[in-house]
Length: 249
Image 1 (cartoon, helix red, strand yellow):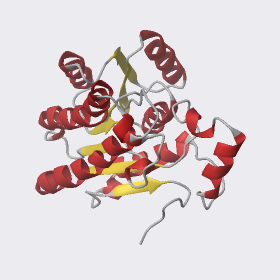
Image 2: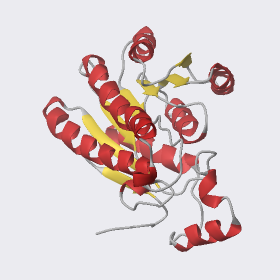
Image 3: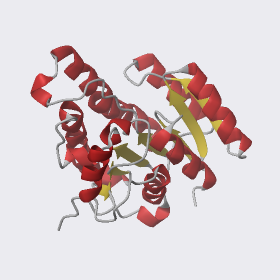
Image 4: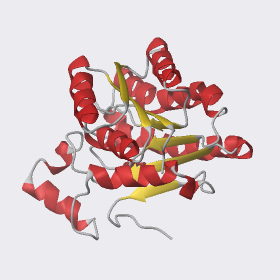
């Protein structure tokens, strides 16, 4: 489905990011993966290559302009870029948004929002050469439904919804689609705090009509669809992958 295409997936050595990279690779895409920690990059690269996938990798902090530039250089070595998946995010504190310090707020905004904007902007010269240009942001259910433990993080993820709508409108005439995935509660290390006690987990499950926590692979399959030709007429959409939580008309 994605043969002869090149995909960049940020924060792609663990959890949802790794699952996305794996699925795109299984669909035939050549992969550029990255993470901030060298040991994680090395581990994930070996893991994906052992599965027969075409992978290039590097250490990358998405807030660093030179690091982002290297991502695109790696993509060029594969022949170009067709798919950008902006997945990197941080949440260094848990609590209400107005309890967040200015420095932490700046860090969350810088990684979760500004870096997604800059990655999309910097990817355009390559995406414009592709016949299948795709930009996919990874947001969160907390973009729609704030959680008291995820104040500033939820705000940053709401900002991605607006970025998606605006970028999609601008790029639609060029045939480049821009969409956003909003995962619900997915079983990852990143979301561990949300199920840190039996009571907290029970409360979470009462909000999920399907009655279970999601899997990273279930997010990855939605990304693969949006990256494919089957989704060529879909742009500007924010897709919830949440087991029915907050399903809306």
